[in-house]
Image 1 (tube, rainbow, N blue to C red):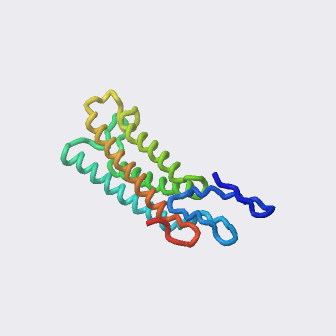
Image 2: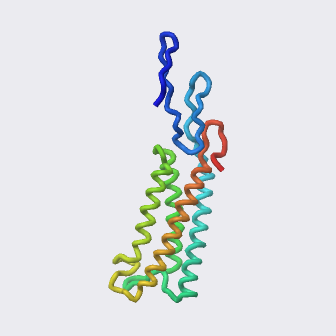
Image 3: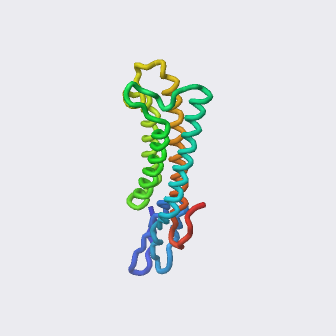
Length: 187
């Protein structure tokens, strides 16, 4: 923790200077004032979120096109029930990126160590998305062994989209938070 100093009758204890956010300046200001907390630039965060959704959409379109066109694999996995169209599949990816942006915004405003929580949530959601094609759902079931290639292709596309969402939104969040001096955040 901190060290104690005796200044006459007044005992002063140094505070812990471990930064809460990457890039946070922990220096003590005038008269021992604690520096201002993080300031979020929501426009930068949401611009990053919209660009992430564009990247995810393009990534999923490329994945579906490669799977269908080159490998003749039906992606997303068809099922005996209503099949998820390629358009709806890409739209879900775009929606996931925008929901992740909203989650990052909420976590930055309300929690300590928001990017740690964000990383865990995105990681676990990505694991769910990777496993989803192998479950009894709109994506297919274990009884369709012939569809294993479609399930694997869908899982790979989902993993790539999840990694993109996690890394790009984290970068946008770091770039949209500033500390004290009104800077633009880390670059």
